Length: 232
Image 1 (tube, rainbow, N blue to C red):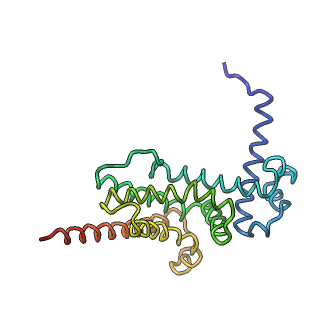
Image 2 (cartoon, helix red, strand yellow; image 1 turned 180 degrees about the vertical axis):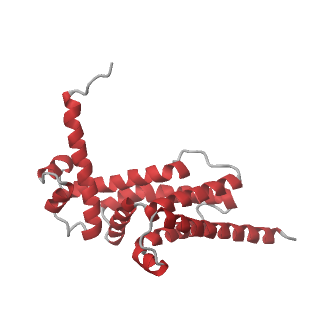
Image 3 (cartoon, rainbow, N blue to C red; image 1 turned 90 degrees about the vertical axis):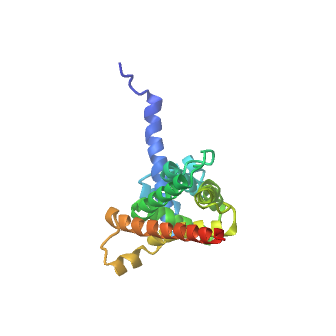
């Protein structure tokens, strides 16, 4: 027999929906207009919620910015997790397996960043934070940037033999990430130059093919340099 939801659960569900709507509205408006340029009234209107619900759920506008940052961390962890694994997950010991995981991570990241509408709001919010850092950026850096970048560096070491924390490896990983991010921040320029009316799944697949080709070329160059250095 299916047990009907109790009154407490029914009360909690609308509250959680309101909370989620406010976070999504804040993410969108803070990214588009900036924190100082966005009023709580605008956020409430965007979320179709009572303005008093911001103070009730978050304590105020600053608490809502923190919640938006936590939402970004959770979202990216969900997207990247299946390809990257968490910090405690064992690293592949075989170079070929590590390379395969690098390609999978790049493909998953590109698919989300390039094609997902939600990624646009996330990137706008993060760019604002990078320009004018607050405690929200600290949460995003500690929850996503640092662990994901470190994990990719570790995969790079397993794939190439180059030290994970060397300057060259860290910079290489930043370039891999950067080429994907450009297709989001330069979206309008890309659409015009490519003659694409929009960038959806089909266009994202083409971007993935090119970025994967770039990764393949970098790995081949590293392998060639290593082989050349081993010759007598």
